[in-house]
Image (cartoon, rainbow, N blue to C red):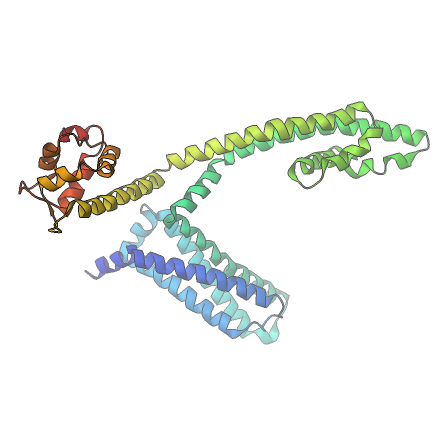
Length: 370
């Protein structure tokens, strides 16, 4: 009985909301602590930060222990949500290690050396990792989960996009660098090396040229600045940059954007849990609307709908339109009434009305009301 109660408590919405609130508060406090400690020496950080840190770690430890007690070791590490549980266990374990290390270092603060400082830095870094638990929001916020999963789904497309862009960077860099190198050699032979000073800023080597081409399309550099010095080099180098800009900006990047959007949309629709959550929200909205309609139909406020009241209500375009959206026929009020009246009492209660309409919705079940 006790284990059952602990399990129900761990799975409750209140428990999840409370833990998420603590995680968010902890994340804010971590930022404040890092900001305050940035201007202080080791050992000068206010003590209350350590006290809050111990309190938060204690709460997280209790959460993990309660789940272990409720689910058991096998249930905790092998259940449906095992990866979330393992993630939580790893972060909390790291937090406990961080507390122990910091305590040990502080006890010998009078004999602090470089090795102790390295341990303390590791402990502080481990503390900041606790903020990573904020990703648990993905379990509870469907919109955030959709965005993150959509981004992850585009990683394959992103990889091949980078491969394609690297190939383009390389090919154009070879052409432009070769032209610049020939021009600079000729200028040196003619005793005019100053002509190459501006060119070598952008096109000195193939890697440097690739970086310039990347910056030119990513906003890190105006491509006109890199193009102007090439006017002296020749038509091939100058035209190569123009062609590169046209191909990458007006063709490749636009096509890639379309591919990314299509992949993200497909992944969002393929996520079963997100689809279930959307369907549940849709059903909840429909049921709430049905309750409001029931109140409007129940003219005498008896919490029961009679056949006469239903016939009168079906004359209203609003109800007919809503029933049509559920694909429920409203042509025969008597058939609809008898179908929804599950107990055959001659009157429809609120629960009967909502449940009956929800069961009848759809093209196949809608035939039952005809």
